[in-house]
Length: 160
Image 1 (cartoon, rainbow, N blue to C red):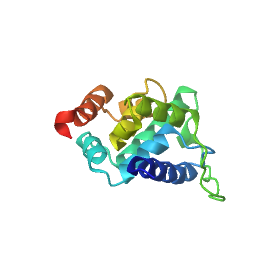
Image 2: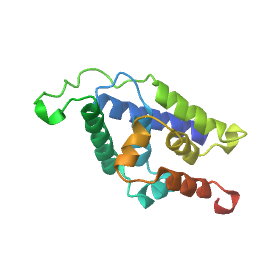
Image 3: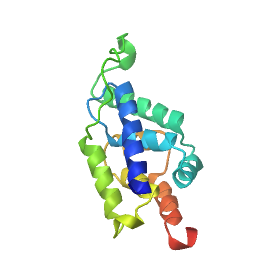
């Protein structure tokens, strides 16, 4: 198995644990982003930390996005004191639509699979124009366009 295959499998597995924590039935793009922030990979870690994003910061941004989305629908999270659902069962292994699209965008950014790097997976996630990830990053004050530009710089032949 190629190194990139091992990396992608590890990210999906870690994303499954974050999805399980969220009580999600599927692994979505934001779970993959959390997993990338957890994984020790120098390029993706450097790009994320340059924007002040680590696992904790991304989790906080996602929590703010969730609350903001509920407020937009007229629901206040603070008005309810609901217990968290039980954490029974195994982490999901099925990818949701946003995760599949993120992987497709990442794969499409290279001509050949052998050119695929972990940063391409992050690129696929960050290039989403709509969805949880762009909303969460915007609420966290992260300039997604600047973050993508920084990531693309790391993928140029001069930086490898």
